Image 1 (cartoon, helix red, strand yellow):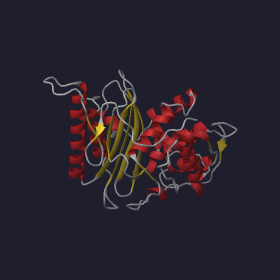
Image 2 (cartoon, one colour):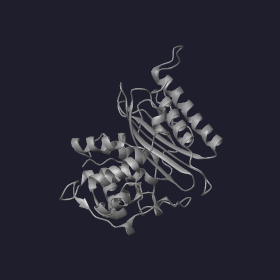
Image 3 (cartoon, one colour):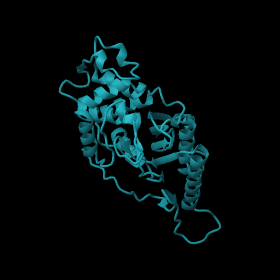
Image 4 (cartoon, one colour):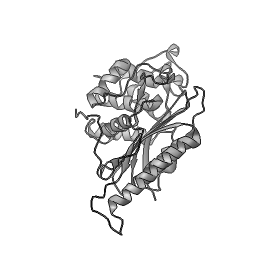
Length: 308
């Protein structure tokens, strides 16, 4: 399995400049009366940084973004290496980890569970306590419906949070810190590391599983089917995607108003874009804010020049 080192990546057209994040351009060609492509990219990226800061002020929130054009390597980063609670976004990565290392019986292995194992928000698994479900069905429920019991059963299949962490370490992710199952993983402590990650780490994990060599082709196709079929993300990254684009994503919500979306955008023309938008608020009982996530995603895509 290919290992990916989590470190600052030198972008093709965007270089770090502003506090808390990446991105302005270095044209490297002296003064000119005609904007160069790199100068244009730099202007777009700088505008994105200002928009992120404005959104934080407007919504009294913290915003973390990492978006990368997988063809050019150009990226937008804002608080990309700060920790946020990952909430239910982990379910996409746990499902991918199961795809990467399925049990001897395969994904269609039956998994039994009882009503005592059900936790809050389990709309699919609560219907099948008498029959159980297969791992494939559990992954579908976890990714497409964010079923919490299904997420827990995926973690169990991986050897618990520690096994999930080991799978991510094998991928090259030394940042993400799985510690608990649902629903406790959504109880966040400001400044804590339990059940947290960063926008850069989550986007990189998703990229490696969905687009890289971490999974064989058939498993990548299965993961894409689950992500594209997600039912919980219509108001987030999907809401700002251009006509003709296909979005696959996994959302998450937790206390402190945490609202997240990690996504792959397959464009009708151009290489895929991978994006992670993580948001939270100071107050533990703050409301989640879909509009904030959508606006941050739109700013990132405009910063990459993908939206006009």
